[in-house]
Length: 193
Ligand SMILES: [Fe+2]
Ligand SMILES: [Fe+2]
Picture 1 (spheres, rainbow, N blue to C red):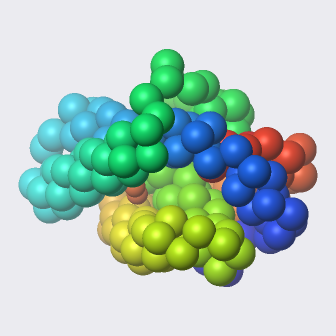
Picture 2: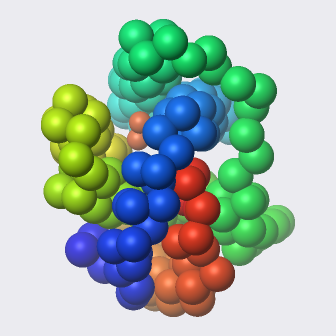
């Protein structure tokens, strides 16, 4: 799915389902981070009109996702806990090439974003087809579709702005790195856990 090298062990969905309160809180903060990342990309690349236009749409959609998860948290009588760290995302961030020219930096940041969208999409798909709670399953299906759209946008812009960069090679490098990284995950009730 989406070029991922390793599929999530389906048992992860059972772990997630066993602690809905925790997965919802973690998920809410993932959406906040996705919105923040899109805004950060705008501030780093403000000269590209088409990119800024699409990133502002993504930032709004991620904020909407954050609000949707928060509404579910409230409906279920929970409260949004403190911000969770996402060690998967932090590890992936280290793979971004530091320095280099602006095209290389933009391509890497876009591929980093596409990678997280791809894995999130895969996790949402698994939740939507596995968990017993039908309301949540439908919600995760909707998010899967939305995050797949973001994945496509990030990949498309990486190809568009990758002048002088072998984008396909770099994407394959990301996929291989992520395929190794994800082997240490799949054990916790977090979206990328
Ligand atoms: Fe999202
Ligand atoms: Fe997204």
